[in-house]
Image (cartoon, rainbow, N blue to C red; front, side, top):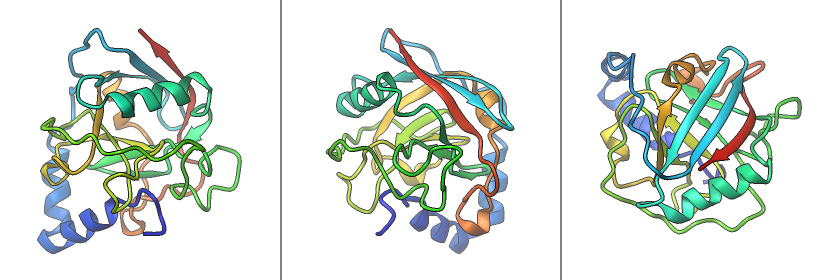
Amino acid sequence: MSDRNLFLNSLVIGAVVVGVAGYLYVNRSFAGGGDATDTPNPNLVIEVAGQANGKIVIDLDMDHAPNHAARLIDLAQKGAYDGVVFHRVIDGFMAQTGDVQFGRAGGDLSQAGMGGSDLPDLKAEFSQEPFIRGTVGMARSSDPDSANSQFFIMFAPSDNLNGKYTVVGHVVEGMDVVDKIKKGDEIANGTVAGEPDRMVKVTVEK
């Protein structure tokens, strides 16, 4: 794949086969609530601005995905995520962000979703953790070991992802903010037109 994290392609095609409308209807039924329980692990704190305004707190899963969690911590502490947009958002499915190369607000977003950081890709850390509402996963291409900087937050459960993508954390505060993130065009694989919502500031709290 040319897009290093177009993990959505196969899922969208599969959803069409079984009926996109039915898939989205079922997943939207999980709206409301969703904040997981915080653990002693570090938290990624995201200040969001745009259509959604507020704070999202992600409890990083150092137990199941220590290398991926460390990558998010590293990039956040360097300020690499500050100003990066939610470039792909599919209603009833997930919101994707983290392209520190091509996804910065105010710049040319035509290649948003195609890039990563200047750090090497990560070896997969798949686990038995399910993809439910509030789960945070690492985006990748068809290569299981291609996750780098991009991640996505689930609006609703998706068993199709279980064991196939690295679970790097869970939202413990701010699912109401996640729900309000500006949605993209489902026909265009969730690409957000105009001015996408953005991560104004991303910090780490321990």
